[in-house]
Each structure stands twice: as structure tokens, then as C-alpha cells.
Image (tube, rainbow, N blue to C red):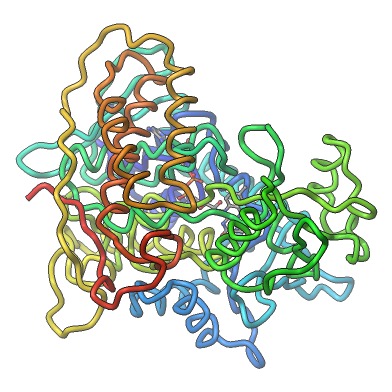
Length: 523
Ligand code: FAD
Ligand code: SIN
């Protein structure tokens, strides 16, 4: 295969937005490598929508910026958020021009929803709460027309590094054969790692592969302790948990404890609502609270896909209160990138949930993730086209390279947990059973609520699992989950405070000295 100009790892909103721009606008030779079918991604599961201010008064990009900063609990990078809210509307309009259809009223005006932490209704949605399906559909159609190479069912195992530069990936192809794919630039857009936890909204493929690959080559990774738990996943045994979109609360659904009383302002940012639910669970001695959507009119019309999901488990939102509990949902941290997605390793770029570019801080604002991918994926392409080749001290990268003007969130380097990079083959036993056990351990010991002793017991377990032999995709995913898990636990141990999505029951307050990014990097 001829060397590619850009190899994109992953086919969610971030990777595909970049691939389409690189091929269509800049005529790069682009390859997309993805571990499932092209449309397989967390993006496809997105419900509530895309937050973007398409019109003016009374809403504004300044208000979107302010809401994002408030939700981020002191760790957002102001410049990165400015980029997100200012460039977002144009990227959304490009997606619409590509064919994505968002819900409109009978006059053709976009219907806008409100979600937790947003001061205004500014969230575009499609199919009620099936926004991800539409976003992914439009992008997959576009990339099929433009990318030179599409490698589906191909699992990226590790980055290929030559003289300190990322030059490609080693992968397992669809027949299980080891291959190497080379490119001048590699964009990692492999999404998050919600599968770290036994209770999650994330699909099975969200195994933190990109972050683990980055950790193995010592690319800087930060903010990983901030795993966001969505407050209202349906309390049910299925994996992943069916999500009951925050848009339901935006439309007036209420949270109630065991006795039916309301216990929290439902439209606060997610970290606050999830913490309040955990306190209520303890007070009630229960494993769920109630989401009361009986007050909503036209539920079936506004949220048809959620209605279908509820039908399947025998619940009627018109009459039944819906049992809910927090579930792992989003990785706020990841591989550190500057404002153009350049990582600390030349040749390696990052965008989307795998990245830590500074827009989400300690807690992502609802519906800012699809927007993040749409904005920062294409920025990588623009930077490569302009000749950029290494990171500068902008966005979250300030935590690695330092800040010349004192702006941005400073970094504090933490040691990586030693995990051998070399993979040995061999029989690791029952991988599925071990994954299940590990996920339960992480949920119990490093979940919504953590403390010193729970984290201390989690770390050895994670390191041991990360050393299991790798022989196929399942065992490689488990190694990646454990590698990411070890990083999450290490950072969570050192963050002796409660901030955003990170709650330490033994340190219930925020600590000003910890208004820093904890950065894991080898050297
Ligand atoms: P993804 O969409 O996860 O794509 C990653 C891609 O990388 C996938 O194609 C995957 O198969 C591939 N990949 C991963 N590892 C490898 C590997 N080793 N080799 C090859 N390929 C690999 N956000 C919002 O903004 N609004 C919402 O309404 C919303 N609702 C959500 C609802 C649910 C149920 C969930 C789970 C999340 C929701 N989110 C929402 C979050 C949002 O969907 C994700 O954060 C976002 O889609 C991530 O996009 P991405 O492109 O970074 O990654
Ligand atoms: C939801 O619809 O509640 C999910 C939105 C998000 O994760 O941004």
C-alpha cells in the first residue's frame, strides 16, 4: 500500500469529520482504519444532540462558553473552549450541507433542546433522541465517497514509532493477520473507554485502546481521573445500560427518591446530579432513584427511540416512574493535544473523546462531545495542510510544554504505572470472564465515589490484568482497559480532592492547589 498522507484511526464523529475534510478539501490520500464496521462507534449511540449556537440573541457563544467553563469545574482551557463554541456553528452547518437532518418545526426552524448545565435551549437533535445515528449516517456516506482506503474490522494494536516520530500502526486485520499501515501523519480518533466499568452507557468497543496505545509509547496523557457518570441510565441488567437522555430532564422530567420527593435541581451539570443521586441512594438504601417523565406531554412523539427501549423492558413512561442510576459515560481526559490536536509525539494527532484538548476540563457539558469531534478533527487536517509538524503550548498542551504567558491550566507530572510494552502471546484463560470481573472491580473501587483505600486495592489488580498475554482482539482490549484503568486509579489516588466528575469521599472539597492537570508521561 502506498504511504498515506493521513491515517485516521476510528470512524466516529472526530475521525470521519477529519477524513472527509482531508480528502474533499485538501485532496490528501486518506485511510480510515476502524475495528468494526465503519458505522460502529459511540457516536452512533448519541442521543440528546449537538450543542451549538446557530442563531443570536438571547443565546450567544459567550453564554455557551460560560456554561462550558462552569461545568468544567476550573480545569477547562479558555482558548480551547473559545475555539469550540466559535467554530462549532460553521462545522454543524457543514454537516447539514453534507446531508445530516436535524429536527425542525413545521416552519422549518430547528427545534432546540435544553440539557443540564446549559443556560439556554441550544441543542440540535435528530430523530428525537437518535442524533448519533444521523450524524454517523451522514459522515459514513461522505467518507465512502472520498477516502482512498477503508480498513474495516481491523484492530489497531500499537503505534509504530521511528526515531521518536509516529509513522503508522501495527494492527490485526479482519483475518487476524498482523499488518503494519504506514502514514506521514496518524490521527488517533479511537473514542473513550466507558467499558472500564461494569455499569456503563458505552458500547462494547469503547475500550480505551487509543489512550492505552499512547501510554505505551509515552505520549502525554492527562485528566484521566475525570470519568463522567451519566446520572440517568436505566437501572437494568443490560450491558451497556440504556440511556435516558438528559433531554428528558430538559423537557421537565423530575428525579425522585424512594419516597417520591425531589432531591436535586435536575438541570445542574452532570457531576452534581450524579453525586446527589449517589447520596440519595445511600439515604434510601436503594440501588436506583426514579425519573418521573409522566409529566411530559408528547413523550412518544418527541422521544420515539427511548419509548421503544422502554417498551422492550415493559415500562410505560406515561404511567411508570423509571428506575435510574449513574453509569460511566464519558472520558473527560485523554491524550494531550494542543489547539490543533498535535500530541506530544510528532506525527501523532488526536481528536474526539480519546483526546484531552482542554475543552471539557473536569466535567464535560452535555452535548459538547459531538461538537468537539466536529471542530477538532478538521482542525488537525487544517494544521497538517498548513505545514505544522509538532505541538505548541496552546490548549491542554500547556500542561506539558508550559505556558509562556501564565495562561491556561498548569500541569503536574505523575509517574506512569510500569507496564511492559511488549506483548507476549500465550493463553490468558477466559478473557470474557476476566473482563467482567475487572469491570465490576473498577465500578466498585474507582467508580462515582472513590476513596484512598478503595483506590489502593484497585491498582495492583489493574496492573496484573494489564500484563495478561495478548493473542487476539479480546485479549488486546482487556489489556487496554487495564492499562487505562491503572492510569485512572493512579491519577485518582493523587487527586486528593473532589472536583467535577472526580469524587473522593475522603476529600469532599475542592483544593485550590490541585487546580492542575495531572499529566502522565514517561520523560
Ligand atoms: P467514537 O464515536 O467512539 O469512535 C471511535 C472509533 O474508533 C470507533 O469507530 C471505534 O470502533 C474505533 N476504534 C476504537 N479503538 C480502535 C482500535 N484499537 N482499532 C481501530 N479502531 C478503533 N455526546 C454528545 O455530544 N451528545 C449526545 O447526545 C451524546 N449522547 C451520548 C449517548 C450515549 C449512550 C453515549 C455512550 C455517549 C453519548 N455522547 C454524546 C458522547 C459521544 O457520543 C461520544 O463522546 C462521541 O461520539 C465520541 O466520538 P469519537 O469520534 O471521539 O469516538
Ligand atoms: C444525553 O442525551 O443525555 C447524552 C448527552 C451527552 O452525553 O452529551
